[in-house]
Amino acid sequence: MRSVFLVSRRIAETMWWLGPLLICLAIYWYGLKVWFQMDDFAWLNLATRIHDGQSFLDAMFRPLAQGTIRPLSERLFFFIGFQIAGMESAPVLRAVVFATQCANLVLLALLTRKLTGSRIAGFAAPALWICNSNLYVPMAWTASYNQILCSFFLLLALLFWIRFIETRKWLWYWLQLLVFIIGFGALELNVVYPAIAALYAFCFARQHLIHTVPLFAISAAYTFVHRAFAPVQSTEIYRMYFDGSLAASLLTYLRWTFGVERYATFKGWLVWPHQAIELLVGLSLLVFVIVMLRRRQWLALFATGWFFIVLAPVLPLRNHVTDYYLTIPVIGLAILGGWALSKAYQRGPVWFTAALLLALIYMVPSAAMARGMTIQYYMTSSKVRTFVRSVARAHQLHPKQTIVVRHVGDDMFWAAWWDNPFQIFGRKKIFVAADDEAHIVPFAEIGSLSRHFLSEQETLAGMRTRELVVYELLPEGRLRNVSEVYRETLARDEHLSIPKYIGFGPKESEVFLREGWWEPEGNFRWTSGRSTFVIRGHQTAKGQLVIAGSCPPQHMAKGPLQLTVSVDNQKLPVSKITSGSLSFEFRYPMPASALGRPSVLVSLEVDRTLEIPGDKRLLGLIIASAEVVH
Image (cartoon, rainbow, N blue to C red):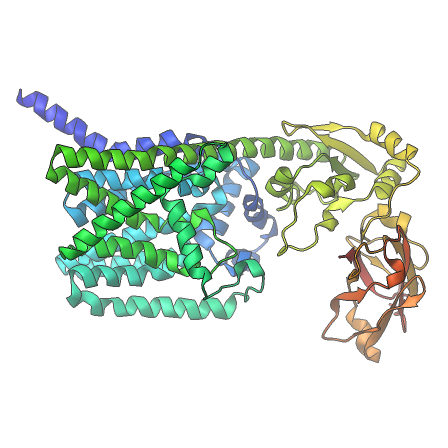
């Protein structure tokens, strides 16, 4: 009898540790198998820029996406993976993501058991957290590993902090400090850790509040250094607003925390039952918090405070309210929910059954959404993998020819094209067919996408000289060569349109050039004293002509250079190029006469040319692109 009891106890102990991990695998199994997509390629591309020690430091620490500096969770993470297995390193990186998240579940179980003294709460908290629908992004998208790794550092540092308070041994304090500092390499959100540690001390050990002062000093120093070196974000999507939108954003995050109504809308389910679940679960947890606070049970304050402290830095981003920002904040509510279940268990079977049912009506649809979205990410990434491999094969077959791809939809453009995976295997001259541009939904903060598309006239010219091939993207992601069929189709069309964008690097752009241009060099061409080209007229009253290029510094020996631009012989405002504006993007209002015109003649004229020793050409400016924007 005793042996049966011991075996049962060991099984229960094993399941206490393994249960949340098994739930994690059941929900996010397809997340283990996802390939790269979207921002993943931007981080993989870093490896192509590293050639020596200086370029390595540059790649690891120079502020990049949105001014972020995350060497551990993004740069070094992807760089090491790429060194191990190149473009096939996704399984390695996904294994690291899942291993880290499993460690997080164990840490959360230990933390909750320590805070509550309950094994039930210790089991329930990680289960509630991993079932939250907002975790699908970091569990299915490698580029968001920063959320998982930051969770690890916050949980581990807090456990060390609690251990220091319990034992008064400074070893634990210094370990906490070390983990806290390393955590800045994962995510800027790590800056809130001192507030979490201080809140814990306020709730349970106020005499130790003084020991959080160095932590706040480190966060302040990090914030100062980060703002000094990271570029100020001017894009609207990352602009911070401290107004009434804070309450609106908070309400959105609370609804996403407790329910899946947006997924119900996506799936065509009835929405009102999920709204009712949000309200029921949210109000029940609020009542529990109020009751516990009235009883001076300060864990309710700490767990609730975790949610608001970690969420606070992203609340002002009203134009970037994003579900995966909830990954770390909901840890606090998971602790609260686990504690509520343990309290219900103590009150008897009826209370526990009611609490368990409440937990299940939250967990089941939330886990269903998390699993469904993870599968969606897996399916998209599988198509991306097939597509990128097909482009790599096409690159082998046509190493010197330009590649144009037809039938690239909005989903594949953003998942597989925008972050340029082709650069990793050396493919530079690749474009989307012009007729696909209408199907791509642009983002205002990104600006024009026209540089990714090649016009029909340029495509036809390239195919006629055998310097260009056209492929068709099939539904499963494979490519099929349709050059001959597409060439015949375009050749029969007598009214191929002039594009609104011209990149002067591709050789095919010659069809739009008139007088005064030199041969292409890389992604640009030199003008002479006067150079002309044709482009489509503007379609709205406020159209602008944008000319992007640069001026060689040798031109400045005789002072500023003047550029005169004309559209159909109508001169636009003169631009002055100085030593402080050698790289330029000039914008000119299009004349009213060009409105709706299928083609206009643009002239670029400089007031003097440059002669370089050994070069017989008379050089004007370096022009990369011209575009008519609306």
